[in-house]
Image (cartoon, rainbow, N blue to C red; front, side, top):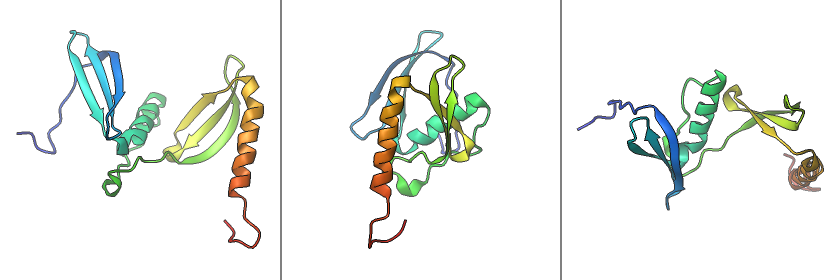
Length: 139
């Protein structure tokens, strides 16, 4: 019987053949290997955000040293914490936003030029929702 420290190595996957969500909110990925075998991996919802961050970080060469999976929050989806935000223009000239996440991971969002006014409206709404209320506590 495998122990907690046993490590299993999957083959290199050739294709993602399906993605699904379980009733518990976990994500199920199905892959096909080069030798045509099918594999199914289920990722607990509490580590989905951290897993995505680790993958993106590895692709950019800025992978965090550890995966933040606080076991006390086993039923909670970990939030991605935004620590910075800046405007950007893609190499093709499209507008975008560079989101800087915890562990200094940067994720780029490409926008359609027509979406910028709507984005301004959303940010104004967010500002209104989080503004200190008269007579209420300050944030």
